[in-house]
Length: 183
Image 1 (tube, helix red, strand yellow):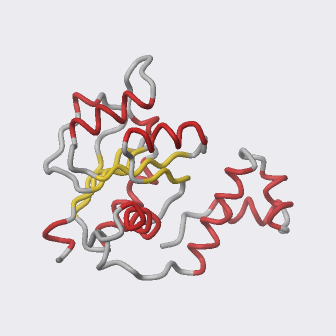
Image 2 (tube, one colour):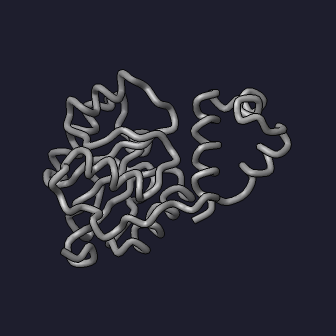
């Protein structure tokens, strides 16, 4: 099965650079990818196709005083056949359980790569051919960049603490973070 004829991806992320990067990576992997506009209500989502994969940052959807569970249920109703992958900068075990109860395929910490999204979907649907065409390993530079960002998230943005955990000077950490993520 060719991903270009079957696999479609919708990305809902209010971080424009993160959304563009994911779209580019999915397209390079042979998927048809699109991004919804920032800060839309679920009822306003106009998508030119029915996505097979929905990569979502819950902070993107603007619904006043609605919990994450309600947002995910609405998306599940709107895109019934989509595999929902939640990605967020602030990892919460409680949110992870809510996402699992609602039926999200995965709960990942940003930044995520296409390989991580597809690996999570393979774990959720082991017999599924989703992403079978994309098994290329990440570059060493990309793995380093993602590891640095995970450590920074774990340190709640404290660069001094993150640099100490990584055993690199703070200046080196700042320089690495100032660059665009490698492909």
